[in-house]
Length: 464
Image 1 (cartoon, rainbow, N blue to C red):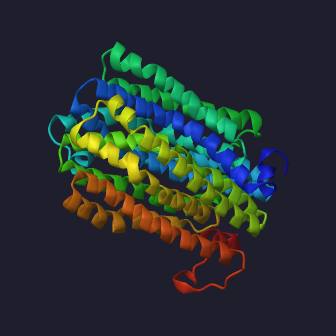
Image 2 (cartoon, rainbow, N blue to C red):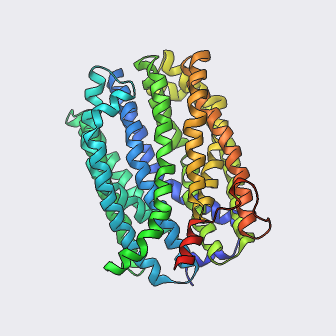
Image 3 (cartoon, one colour):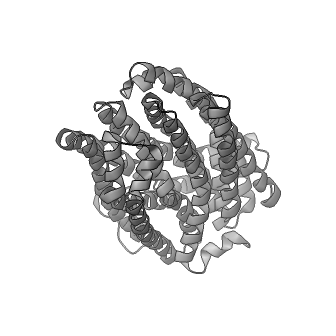
């Protein structure tokens, strides 16, 4: 093995985690920043129902995005493992079959969501004109889901090769396209939400194209899948993709719970929540990227059987998350006034932004712990652990904490409840990840409720 992917097997782990996370996050934040700017433009229109519609639509778009993330995790993990074993041809083949399966499954999933948009928006608590606005916005964006899947999977493959820069540039290009088109379509052509949706679709075209080209030009291309390849890769892809998708779908379920509970306090509260949901990925985009960055590092070292560096990569990611969270939380606290002015917020919406930019931002560290632990589970062959952790946080903990928070503290309590759920399962996921790494490295004998479970990749390997 040579080139950029080989460096994961040597050198300073904290440096690798930092570089991969920052470069990956630049691309993510380019897209998130456009969403942030979208919300600024929509707030400038002075219509609370538009901001609320984006809030409801955002909760549903989480479902489609989560599907793409799950497929990307599966292909990225398998390609990284093949490269760690030195099998470049297998990596190329799995890239091709993964993309094909991703598009097919993405089309099916997108159709199901598109056919049920009105019911989903209403289920979240939207009423009146807000329902029509959210549905019209979603009807334009949801059909572009296959493009979203291609872009995410292409980026994951590039990161598996250690090519974080080109993965970053693909999303930057998409973000630039969106940023240029937004003011033209929203204001210039007076299309409002429709213009924002059209700009997002065109941006997805750009991301899909610019994530595939580097794979073809710089990493040996994509092997044309044969029937035997599709049969060979279906089980390993499904073994990681299914639980990974289920894991990722837990997040929009949790967001839907939060949105539903916030809806009882009116459109101003939902609009404030929508603004907070746009601030989160811009402020903590690096933590969102951290799981995708540390995954290849853990996967390649696990493939090379260097368990000390597997553990070191996990710990380095947790340290990086802690440092980053403290710095960003301090910055948000200092900028809370300008942020309110930027969105022209007052009343309930302003209260939500202020409480987030204060102590709640610090608690986001525990979400980072959960992200890193899930990356470890996925790349060590225990993807169902990620599923249990995410669903536990977004249902078992989210339901009572958010309900009680809203009951005791009003709309601010909903945000506190959401944060509390993250704290509980951040701690649980950390404890489980430490045990899994120790068990897989042979340092701990199997014990406890997970003692008799083999990883899915171990089972597939034995069958093969």
